[in-house]
Image (cartoon, rainbow, N blue to C red):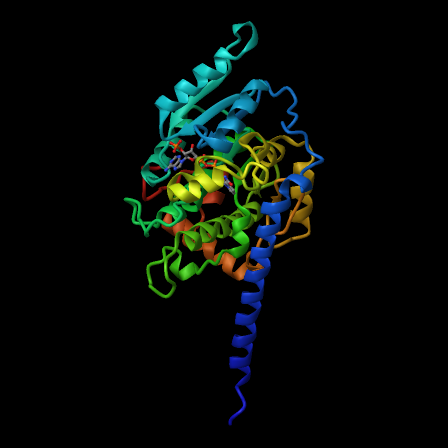
Length: 369
Ligand SMILES: NC(=O)c1ccc[n+]([C@@H]2O[C@H](COP(=O)([O-])OP(=O)(O)OC[C@H]3O[C@@H](n4cnc5c(N)ncnc54)[C@H](OP(=O)(O)O)[C@@H]3O)[C@@H](O)[C@H]2O)c1
């Protein structure tokens, strides 16, 4: 029998490595699920926030779960909070409840703005509206996300797979378009609420939309892939923006929220019955609040940038730096994900530079910005 060629061996070796990495990823996920409460024991249940008056913080998906908790705590600490939500009515009802709980009838400084991440046109309109106010933005928290577990493949009206659009494309577009406001608010931050599921994710930059049929679609693949794509894009964004704006990812842990709304009834009941392992939303909001407010974050991000590390800063549910998926260290793939993402969201390849120089750009999903 002929000896296998070296390229075949290399291919086999790579596949084996990927497979091993995937297994390692699942064991990391299992250990998080089982031991997160022990590993985060050093943290108080509620993240201790300082007085935040004068700070403008925007939170997507602030009507439920982790985002609702992030919004409430920032507002109660005195920040101006913009709830960026698809259901403004629900947001106004939430604010009413928050205000009812305030001592001395003090009203919280909260605004509601409508955004539907399933529509890139809506994202552009939202960003245009905020940017035109010329107000500075200090913190953008890209929290909204979906995990339609077990559901068949669905596409947005823009033609993109829905996990990819809500969890990666729309937040990427929002982050880039809001750069002028974040520059005005510098030192400022973009915090992406990612997921440790990125460690079992796979991104094919030539098939981010699961269209080619090369890989079978499952919601798990789509979710984990969208979160990995977000880490890759964030790493290149961090490299391309000047000091003063930090961009990073966090994972909240396994948290009891409405994220399981699409699960079957049986799995939902099992999920809700795991309180001893799961965080509640308050515990799940700690890493995002830490990343948004901790004064040492710029130093940490600056150090990573100076070391020219391939990946962005990434913090775990216990507010400690962790490594994302090994695949996220592949700069060539991350560069491709960056290029494809800008193309998919209708931005020119030099959008970041132009926006930071105060120049106008054109987005396919809206007018000139
Ligand atoms: N829970 C976990 O265990 C866990 C683990 C790892 C990562 N995460 C991440 O944490 C983030 C928050 O999730 P969660 O657990 O708090 O889930 P959740 O309770 O389902 O909250 C998700 C939020 O996103 C909003 N949203 C969904 N689709 C949207 C769209 N098209 N446009 C605008 N907003 C939209 C929802 O709005 P509506 O209220 O209108 O539906 C809701 O406010 C997500 O990015 C998720 O991937 C969660």
